[in-house]
Every structure is written in C-alpha cells, then in structure tokens.
Image (cartoon, rainbow over all chains, first blue to last red; front, side, top):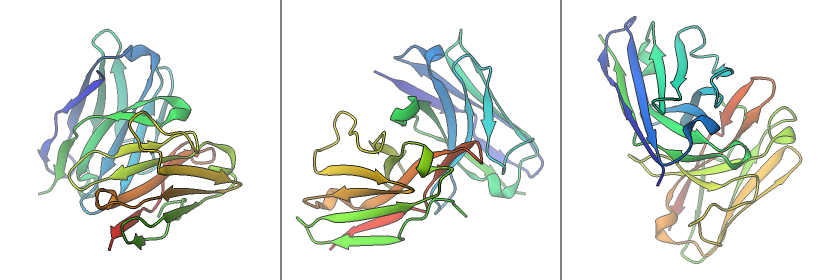
Length: 118
Length: 110
C-alpha cells in the first residue's frame, strides 16, 4: 500500500523559513516524479513544485520560484520542500503527491498546515 | 487566475447526469492529457479520471471523462448524494512549464 506522510508544518512569521518532509513507502520511490500541491483556505488546489525521479529536473510555480526548493533523498524515500522568505499568501495545507506521469497524481498524503502570520 | 476555466457550479437531482466543462488552450489541454480530481473539504483531493478518460481502480463506471481540442469534460451519471464535492481538471502547461488546475466546480445534489 502506498503511503505518503507529510510533516514539518507550523506557524512562522513572514520572512521566515520551514522545511517540509514527505516520508514514503509502498512503492519504488526513485521511479516516480513527486510534487507538492497546496490548498489555501477556501481555495482550490495550486501546484507548487515537481521533481523528477532521479532529482535532476525540478519545476516551480511562478508564485514560489526563487523562494521554495524541492529536493529528494532516494535512499531515505523522502521528499522535501525547503520554504524560505515565506509570505502570508503561502498559508495553506501542503500535500505531497506521487506523480504517475500521464496517469495523474494518484496518491496524496494527509497534508501539513503551514501558517504564515505575524 | 487559472488558465483552465470551469463553471463555478453544477447541480442535479439524484439519478440525473451532470457534466462539467474545462476550457484551456493549445499549450495545456490542446497538447497534454487531462486529469480530474474530486475534493471534499478537509481531505486530500482524489484522482477521479486520468489520461483524459481512464478511471483509476475503485472509481465507479458512472464517472467518465473526455477531451476534444482545447476542452475537456467530466460526466457524472446516476448522481448520488456522495458526489456532492468540488471537482478540478488539471493538466501540464507547456508555456508555464508546470501543472495547472482548473478554477473548480462545486457539484450540488438537490
């Protein structure tokens, strides 16, 4: 059974930093691209970032480019999101998702809440 | 503002058929597959249709997807109370070099 478990969320002041983690099991982690998707209160899903299976390619939404960094550890089967220079508008539940290419984001974690507020 | 446009709401009585549209452009729907997600408040979105018209294991046959040109649609037949949720289309955008989600459609079962 595929399992994705996020952690690392919390309350942070504007301009602060957080690192999110997504621990995975139940599939061959290195074979799949992984993504972070966020849902702000009362809003729909917003794609944040993607990383290829071997970590060589990364993609970012314009809204986070230069501030958030996605990376992975294929030995620990873990995905990360380093969040710097956080803004109030980054407040959301952040989900990691397993990306099966054309077959979509077929597995999601339970999410971790990031609140950016002074 | 999303590059994929959906109607904000759709509704029907139990047993009816509801269709949700998703309008994009040549850089997204026109050149990539479309996936659909169902979202219930407080939960993670769930993949409902992938590769334009394929249902993942466990998704009932009364759910179907299609794509034509730069538009896609999701149909729910035999509407049930459990279908009351928000629905989002999604695809890759070649110009933005990223995934894009639609504006979302809230389905209400009357």
